[in-house]
Image 1 (cartoon, protein in one colour):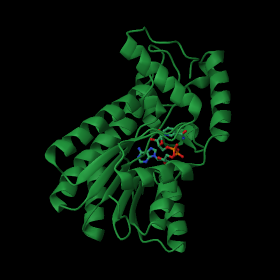
Image 2 (image 1 turned 90 degrees about the vertical axis):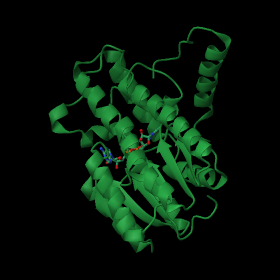
Image 3 (image 1 turned 60 degrees about the vertical axis):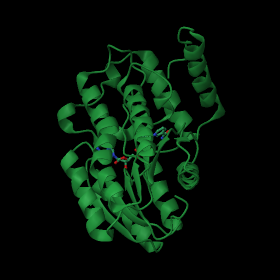
Image 4 (image 1 turned 120 degrees about the horizontal axis):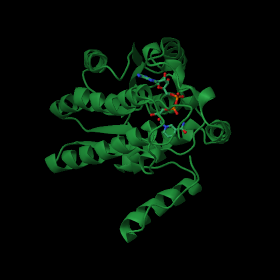
Length: 284
Ligand SMILES: NC(=O)c1ccc[n+]([C@@H]2O[C@H](COP(=O)([O-])OP(=O)(O)OC[C@H]3O[C@@H](n4cnc5c(N)ncnc54)[C@H](O)[C@@H]3O)[C@@H](O)[C@H]2O)c1
């Protein structure tokens, strides 16, 4: 979709980080915005800043894990602008104890992370794509996975992000097979300077908190190191620009990530192709 100006972009998780950067980037391209986030105050700040910069913005507090709220977001978009051209299913969460072993994460961790990261994307696809197709305009769907969606780990984050990669590839193939004017991409960022490690701020109280204090010392060391790596990571604006360019060029895989992460992806793919057992990488 080469022309963005005057068209409508919907972004979930737009109150912070990559979603917020995409909102600014697409507004800069002249797009009209529909923004959603579970965190009301962050969303309100984002909307005020964008409007002050001259953007046309509608917004709704919404939890992407709830299909009814995602359907209401779609209603808001069509009622406000009559069309949606770019859908960014971006909202996502991570536990601060991300590289747990297969048997260590609590079922509440699995529930929370799969509900937001996987089901949130699925609800977006189900609520928006049929209406985008009916509208008959050009369009594009960008699902935010992660480099973790191209690597592996028996923890809810890696599993959820692999599922988003799989869902997105399937969506792309379905749309191409139909000859639709709507296309799709998967976004797999590397280490980006955002608030993802504080994602528990939005965790439903009923699901408790990750009990990091009770966890092994190596996990606690990992958390400290990972926070430092994110702090030294790329600016989210760089990810937003990569998304913009990929949408214009209709490129499916968007992998704005550090070279060391590309090397891990290559190793994993080579393991599969050459029939090697999985190469052990440092946990993380
Ligand atoms: N930061 C990184 O290094 C990195 C790397 C790869 C992938 N990602 C992915 O990028 C996406 C954006 O994360 P970020 O890094 O910008 O983090 P962030 O925490 O800065 O932003 C995420 C936003 O999603 C919102 N959110 C959380 N749960 C929600 C829900 N249930 N419904 C609606 N909104 C919800 C948060 O309030 C927040 O505003 C996520 O899917 C994340 O997994 C991030």
